[in-house]
Amino acid sequence: MRVTFLGTAGSWPTKERSASAIALDTEKELLLLDCGEGTQRQFFQSSASFMRVRRIFLTHFHGDHFLGLPGLIQSMCLNNRTEPMDIYGPPDAEEMVGRALRMGYFTLRFPVNVHSLNPGESVELEGYTVRTAKADHPVPAIAYRFEEGPKRGRFNGELARSLGLEGRDFARLEDGESVRVGDRVIQPSEVMGPPRPGRSVVYSGDTAPSEEVRRLSHRATLLIHEATAAQEIEAEANAWGHSSARQAAEIARSAEVGLLYLTHFSSRYKELEPLENEARIVFPGSHAARDLLDHLIHQP
Image (cartoon, rainbow, N blue to C red; front, side, top):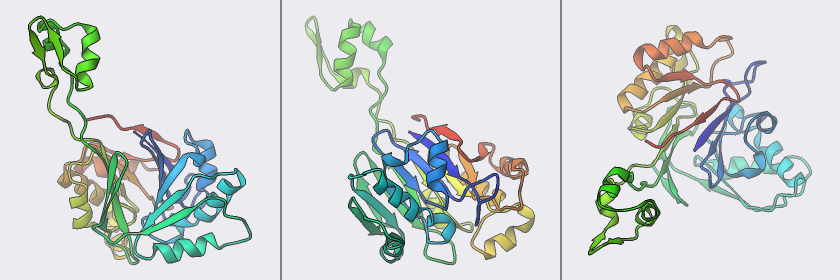
């Protein structure tokens, strides 16, 4: 599982940062989280391919989070895409996405299915679940949690060898088969550890500090949380439905997440180290995302 930050700007793009967009590669499919202006161009500069995007998850309909959608869809059509696309968003998604797809003259060459979600709803997809929570923002907005199903336990090779098993038997046991050694039948449960939780990624979208988002983030492998401003103006940021870097780190610490990436930075911040340092005082595992940064999410 890999996350690629395509755009980390807040409100509008800058010379250094594109508008909000994140690619989440689950290996089976590529998910796009928000689609701000310029997203398709960012794809060309990244390690990800926009033609692989199978599903798009929009947090809300402020322009910096969805205005890249018409261009992306039209470019897919020009490149002869035929695979269906599923787009998810808050309760106003059908109306807003419908408007976007009617912009300009073009022929839609593949099915686009729009799914409106209420905060708290979940979606079961192949190999993972998507859960949602209400974000604290002036317009309808939701945060997402992408969570893999449980993984099989770790194979204890040392124990297996002590039972007389050989290398060729290991794969059979890992696949759930029993193996006979002399008069004894070894069951997979004897050499496999307990099931492990799958990896999980939470994306806050735009939000002031939110108890709902904190609960959604509980023990996530990775939390991607907006950090529009620094601590000294966090009251102003909160009034507009945004968080400071310090507040994002407090959410991460309280939720006991594994790692925090900050994003959605105001254009007033040319350098991100002060925001990163502010967050690390509260939660040492904090990092400021940069455009086109790749992060590989390892199995816990």
